[in-house]
View 1: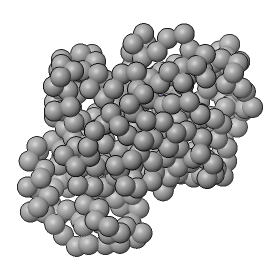
View 2 (view 1 turned 45 degrees about the horizontal axis):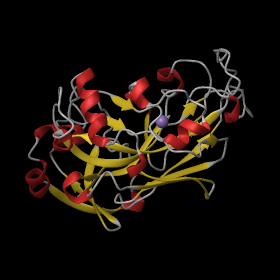
View 3 (view 1 turned 180 degrees about the horizontal axis):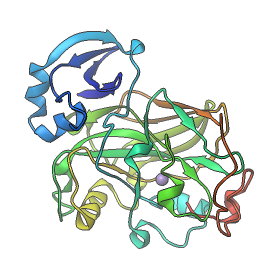
Length: 298
Ligand code: MN
């Protein structure tokens, strides 16, 4: 099943070129979770979806939101493909570095605008395969980890290069495009054999398969759940392969994972960009035009 959030607070099933709205899933309260997070949390999502079908509208007529607009956290893997470790000249990979957190408020839906905050810093695209957690998970084993998956989606981990902390460089507003929707785990197939592609202005920059992940989906869930409790709707993004590069005002960034059945896309804007507030420390690649070959943090 393909599940999407749209038009600020509605959810539905994507069926062909249409979206069938699901009615009455989330409470209409300022303090409630989004309908998607509520649906995931309720557990019996399959029967709920069956009993909540409303009107069908063309996908082309809706504005997509991030599939889960309000996860309690987004965990991300820093260096989880060997080819990306080489291109960034990183001494350590995920097994040395662990995971980092991105602010959930950095999410934006497919078709949205990616807003660059500064005109004097380098920003890169990172196409990634993302996992959405289905139920509370704490200290789960690698063997059982996939039982805790709700579904999968495509994500862009947009990054400012430089020496600031990853949680800052990757948490600017709109720096986590996600979508276009979730495919539930029961229909998705093997997360260890997913073809990942990422384009900028139609040019293919990244092409990899999740079989080359250093820590696969199960290892990432097991590790994250050893750090803290994972909640329904939480996102773990698995890391990016080689091919990251600069993005600029007006660029179109697209990413696609096989099995999702749709392409995530955003338009880059530098409207209103200012000078960077921070210096980027001593990283040689922090400035616009900076080369990834000169090092800097992934
Ligand atoms: Mn990343």
